[in-house]
Structures are given as structure tokens and as C-alpha cells.
Amino acid sequence: MQNILSNIIISVNDKLYVKNPETSELGKKIIEQSILLIDEIGFENFTFKKLGEKINSNESSIYRYFESKHKLMLYLSSWYWGWIEYKLAFATTNVSNPMERLKKGITIVTEKVEDDSTTLHINEAILNKIIIQEFTKTLLTKEVDEENKIGFFLVYKRVINRIIEMINEVNPDYAFAKSLASSIVEGALHQHFLKDHLKTITNCNETVSPTDFYINLIENTLR
Image 1 (cartoon, helix red, strand yellow):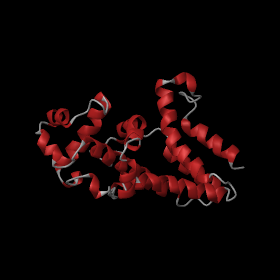
Image 2 (cartoon, helix red, strand yellow):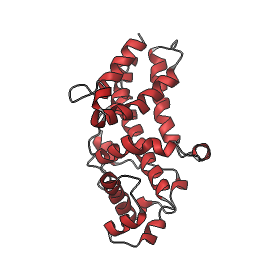
Image 3 (cartoon, rainbow, N blue to C red):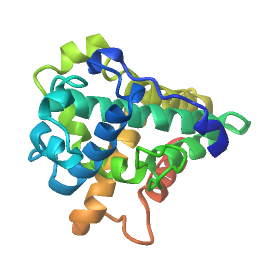
Image 4 (cartoon, one colour):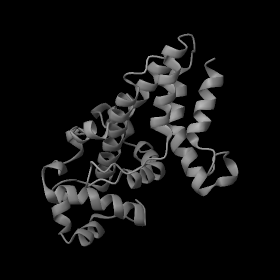
């Protein structure tokens, strides 16, 4: 699967950038270093000025790629969910048993992410940490409805729709497939956050993962 993924280009809505960062070394450096800097100081403290200092480039050069840090965060989120979608497709394509396919799908969207060595300028493990902490902030804005119409969250919704289809294959009579699927994808981020920061209000820990929790949930919910 790694070899196949290495030949795939993750497509991102072209309205999220001024210039596609994948088309130049500076663009790739902006993506690579923005991930590391957001992880280091948090999105609230992240600025293009600080990023420019980190990559030894003018702040204005970053604006040639992204018009705001919000658009950059949306780009990173969209890329991440596109990467998850490809992993989800490859992991479940040849699995004939519906419940086993759903379990594999849930594993992909809930497991701890390791860095993919085939994407040299993007550290998926660190990006996953950012998604866990920051992704909901891209949704909880006044502009969410307009951004949704433009298609900024299309890939995220496609991932959830794949899980919905798997749930329906396991139990076509289950009336809440959409709510269950979105709760799994969104909830997994929250459980990872709780496991790392608010340990007393989750059963997830070093031995029990969010994946364990959600597989147990669907086994008991869909039987």
C-alpha cells in the first residue's frame, strides 16, 4: 500500500490557495514548516511572519501561496482527510465481509497515525496531532456555511460517507448511520485529545485505544 500511495497526488480544493504549494520547493517548505511550527506554538500563536522567519523567507512570499492562516489550516485539513480517504479505500477494497470491512474502516479513521515516509515534506504523525487539536476550529466559524458551499469540507464529508456506506452494509435497518459515522470520525479526534490531556474523563489510555472503543461500540450497536 505504501508504494501505491507514493504514486498518488492528494488533490485539494484550488480555492484554498493562491498558488499550489505542491508546484515548488518553497511551497512544499511552507507546508512542511507550517506543520512543525503550528505543532510547536499552537495555531492561535502561529503567524505568517513567524513562519517566514522559520523558513528564511519574506512574509510576503507566503501570501503568494495562501491569503490567510485560516486558508492554510483548511488546506492542511483537506490534505489530511484526502490522505485518510486513500488509506480507507485501499484498506477496505478487497474485504468481502461487511463487519470486517467496517472494522478496518474504523481502524483507519480512529488509529494513532504514524508518519508516511513516502510524503517527504509532510509529517502525517505531527499533522494528525494538529488535526486532533485544531480541526474543529476550521468548522466552528461564522463562515462555515459559505465555505461548505464552496466545497472546503468535501473530502472530510466523503470520508464520513464511506463509513456510512459500510454501516448500511452491516445493518441496513439501522436508522442512525449518518449520526453514528460522523460521531466516530469526529469523536475519535476528541477521544485522542482526552487521552492525552483530560485522562480522567475517558476510558482510553495506553492500553485501550479510541479504536478499541469504537469497534466495541459498533459491534454492540449494529448487532
